[in-house]
Image (cartoon, rainbow over all chains, first blue to last red; front, side, top):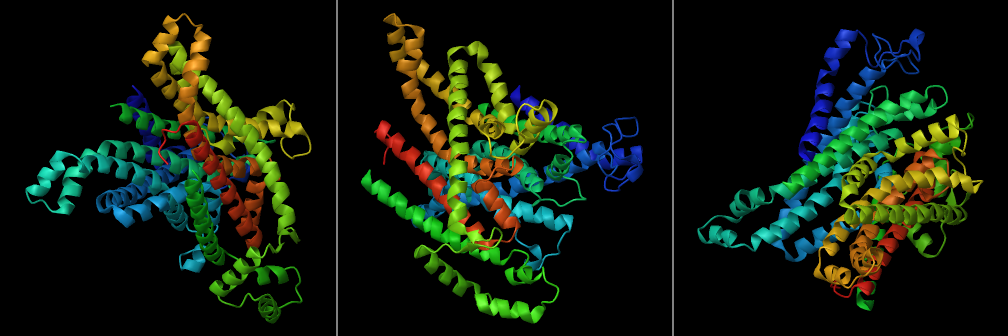
Length: 272
Length: 305
């Protein structure tokens, strides 16, 4: 039930994001192009959710924002899960000082307040690292990298705990005795058996990444306008709280539904 | 216990030292440069003045040398000045910390209280469990900055009941605290529900009921103390997310506090203030986590050291 609800929410969101360019063609607007004669237009057939302070179509910006938010969420989840699985398995397999070092690092990162540090990381000037400034691609890459730096911890701890449990079982010993290499034992035997908890952690990582990206974009440190993202749309809406309060509703609702979809998916996977 | 305390304090110091070095490095990568910013206001000053200013303040030295000089000064208790606010950093940090602690203390107490009440309700009256669970999923999926904006739109702009921000009156605390409570209560509700459900299934609860005790006594005197212990772990893990929440709510509601101070300092390129405020926030977070851990060990000796 939860699994279906979560998959349904996420599927609808992904479909809407995929269909955004088609809808833009159908309605005949450009989501980034200002139309100053049409500011704050009420909902109508050609602007289903009305327009914003620059006359841009709200629905199109919402859907193009979905592309950015979902892309960031998925990319962070993939990178954080990959890094977390590798480090978690390494810690469980090597034990000793490698394990101690990685887990102290994880504890340290968990104990720190994440958002203030993300703000510092996001304020780093990509130009000083030799990357082009202001491009949407750079923004996305930067956000994915800094969210991955914090996101691997949860996955790694889960992967380590689950792998330690598996490594103590007889089939691992049997595989070793029959001459399987250590790499084969870890990747072909242990990893498939701990994929359940890892999938749950990955779904939660998507939720966390979407929330963090929107928060950073809201604070002006994530995806920079004019490219739409749910966070920077809300940041824009905050300045218009008195003149156009409704503009603040839709992007937040989109974040809420997407994140709830991920949590439901994670819950559903956990109970299976 | 004492050994554990010493161990954790050493770990904290190591973390803070590493953190200060990493942030120092990152600040070197931020846009802008204090000397350029200082001369930007006066068109008569040129690049050679910037170079002279840099030499005067030691900004032409390598990052590592500047870091060591800064660390030596901080260890001698000299926190230096904030460029953005033109005040000693110490004079800014302590009032901000006090304001944040009031906000976070209220938010922590209320979110734990309401969350636990909801969780116990879900465990003791299974009819309510789906409603509590739905509420928890919605609450933990809500972006805090959006909720804060909605509260401002509804209660400050439309209804005019409460101030939209500031820190002059006590009523200005209501909306930021409410925002933080909603976002943080889900974890308490879910963990309280599962811990209570686990405890209520144990034989000693059946014994208590068979003795003829009132249901409220069974629930709160017999079951709850045992179910409450894992909740301290939630509280310990929650410290970091509370401080993160403070950054968002203080920024939205324009409340002077650690979160807003850090955000303003980073955005205003005030590196000394940003660094010290971040270290203080990290230290407070880690101390809170440590306190929750110690409380758990003290209350439940079964938790291995």
